[in-house]
Length: 335
Image (cartoon, rainbow, N blue to C red):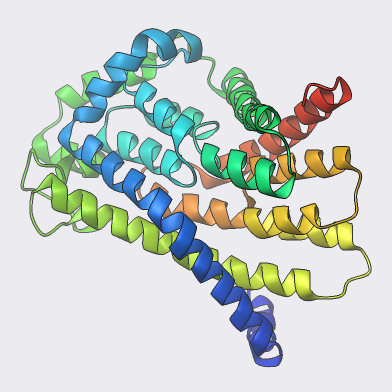
């Protein structure tokens, strides 16, 4: 860690122009794209959880989603959010439901495998449309490739780790919770303690008032600010990496993709590669999300107990499956 910090300080000292440009690019990306698209989702999602409306939405989606994914009712809300939103809202939704006590930690970890992905708008418009120049039909197929490979990742994780048939873990947990005192429930479910239903709030989730509006606004601002910090930080690292004249440009592009999804995808798209190879690599980078999205995910998990290490392993599996699936579709001229 000491060597890494010294290296970062040296980069800032000897490459100030590149660092400034990378920070500017990251800030503009956050301000013009991430903030207006992600902040409304973060605010509304926090409101839905704080007011209990998420449970109603879960019951609506239960007939379609619960039999397919074999999950409890409240899990359906996280799946729906994961389908329409991007990093790190899917992870935040899973963490909120675990902290609220609506779903078990085992179910939350399972949902985290496939509910936290790049947003459909980013994949269809920017990655597939702008970078790869695919027609609209192929853009939709590109997004479905990333999404379906995420579902396969969740299925593999569940089969290997928690092959529970329905949700007995959740039932046992809620039955035990019914016997707990108020103080014990506040310790187990801090988000529930910070909701509008009680004035007892742990310090970690303390808010100015019991209003769900203020709670949702503060949570959304805190989350979007953390996301912006990570985007700027990795924007600097990505710009430094892509601006260096390294002898292996393909390796340089892949490393940029490991760091940050936007910079890495742009670097790979600019390389003179075969269209098939370029599409497969960018699909893998899109599925993985980069270290930036991993740290964004870690920042929103809070005290939910969900494992970031397990999440990283599943994202690596997701990237491999997305690359294989996109390669198969390209080989048969579907994508």
